[in-house]
Image (cartoon, rainbow, N blue to C red; front, top):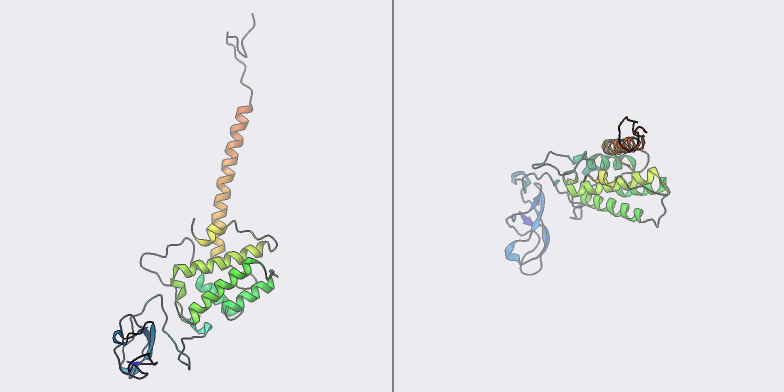
Length: 258
């Protein structure tokens, strides 16, 4: 491997042959990782292979990462559509830790189909539902979309395998579903089910698998509430019924007069 950039101090110039430090990641041509220890440089450094045909991969496959691609200027960058086509939603050791289906990969695919990127998907959603630009949900949706877009195109992370990224995707879907149901008074009452702790028009709204799961949870809660209400009503009716008349000799209600 060789340095692919100049480092401050000494003779650590671009092209200097080095050993790839532990913790580096990349493919058989380019990699990024810690600076050589002797260089005294703080931060990540770009490396290139001097013989790609004979160079093993920088690291073994990590289910959370994608191969790093660099543009003509040496910057990390991969087109969003290409990145999404490489993504996988794998079964992870220890489970994923969220209730309901994993929806981030279908959400990103819908962004490709409906606008080309999360940022354009956000703009389409805002336009289709005429959400006021000053609404706080607009800023939140935009921030989440841009974060996911940078994670995919710059960081080149396999985001469907990260729980935190799945939560970001679910929050986007929750916002858009709330405004779809009631644009003037969005309803966030199903947020616990959406987030997993406890295809509609425009902008890549909530995935059908997630809304089906949420509907099942709400039906269960409604059924429990209905049965509880019926039990209370039956109890009240029994309390209101008059006691049957008896033939006792006492002075209470139903006793015979003498």
